[in-house]
Amino acid sequence: MPRVLVLHGPNLNLLGQRETDIYGKTTLEDINCLMQQEAQKCGLELSFFQSNYEGALVEAIQKAKDNYEAIIINPAAYTHTSVALRDAILAVDIPTIEVHLSNIYKREEFRHKSFISSVAVGQICGFGVASYLLAVRAAAEILKNRK
Ligand code: DQA
Image (spheres, rainbow, N blue to C red):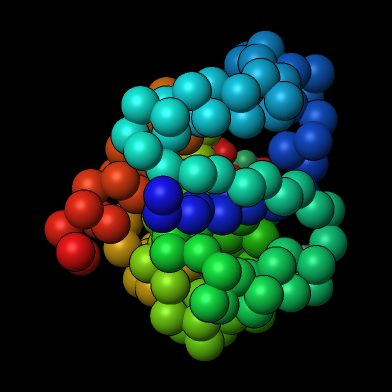
């Protein structure tokens, strides 16, 4: 079964309590469970990692080489700042899907810039928890078309 690495960036460990008007009341644990269910339907095996540290996320991407066939990432605030995450994705050359709960283009201007989107296969944002489930389906689609 194709393996997909799911990476959650800073502050996403606080989902369910953090700015619930924007991000909703679903916890990260619940999101991971829902993604797991979707992955079973799509025939994918998921592994999850959350970190509040940029370097830890960079290392997780580096280690994904040879172990995973796709990456789903919500880089959270690092979306708008991190050349390091972008370079790591380029370095491993694993198809990557960028996810956001909120529609970053409807929010403050500093969120309109993503360092990740131009190295991702695509970006899904604005659908809340469904953004993650759509990302699982997108990963399945990418991997199906590769074979
Ligand atoms: C986010 C959007 C980012 O701008 C923000 O910093 C986050 C979450 C989202 O999922 O909507 O932490 O990535």
